[in-house]
Length: 202
Length: 202
DNA sequence: CCTACCGATCGGTAGG
DNA sequence: CCTACCGATCGGTAGG
Image (cartoon, rainbow over all chains, first blue to last red; front, side, top):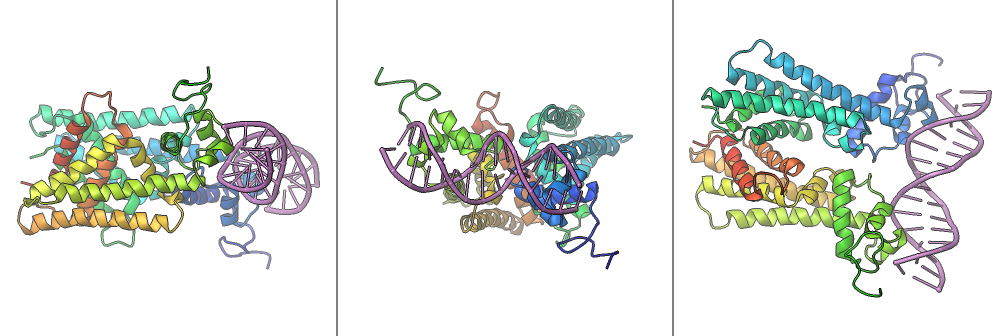
């Protein structure tokens, strides 16, 4: 009885790591919010006592900052990769919306936390995250402006349309399930079509 | 110096009421979330001590329940009034989306709380609110189904389109300002157009 | 990884 | 509307 216990839960032995703490925090923050989650709950889910968490993290706030900043940076990297080398403006917007929608179906917990607990993120991280999000929104707005200039998109209110498209995609995190009838890819395809319609394509 | 002090803030005298407590709670819950707001902060904003709040409320949870249930009921009443007596299916969806969008521009704090702190609402209120929201979403989905059956709308995935439309409107609460270039009515008009496009009109 | 413990703050009550 | 106070819980530290 000294080795190879069950992976986690109440009566297990070892098996805790910074990544495991982060994963539990991801689940609980997404469910109850940052302020609604106590470190004692994270510890309990891992089968350890609260002070033992400090072998893996330095502070509760670090968990939030880690989750939110990493996710936001990945969103921007996704965007750049999605439009890189693509010339057609319809295809650029389609891909930008698609990759954003896809992330919200495949990283639901991260998305819920980013969009709910940013106010709980301390400075300077909060400002950095907000700046990166603004850059993303402006990029989407720029795509719409480009399409309008080319006579391909009809929506003149590009800033509002960009917000509407992004937030529509964010909402996927609130209902998507891997057990549902549609795959993450199918949902992403559908939402990228919605995005083009909002931009006034065709 | 015995009567008629400034309306509120630190050095005022009387002027607190259940409605005033609710209004401050609305602002602080919207800013920091339910669990992120302490009753001591609400009291401080009103210029009174924490225990004095209990002359106006019975518990912190009552404030949240009051805000969330009232808002949700108003949303449903808005919907029913908006489509009542309207036959044309395009106009029905336009009005349903318009009134929902308008509410999110004119009741931003309520909207932010409803969409962020429902998990903090205790039972049975939470189930009641979620049921009413589902009814609303199904009603929007029904409008899309009707339009598709009539050959007016092109979007077959009516459930997903309904969610996308609703959440797009919700997001207005995250950026709208009365000081911005567009009025609440202009924004509501724009979003109701977005809604029709998502439904695949024309 | 633990027990023991810290000061601070939480929502809320007693009793004016 | 207040002061005084309650038990519970918070994030976090000491010291193994």
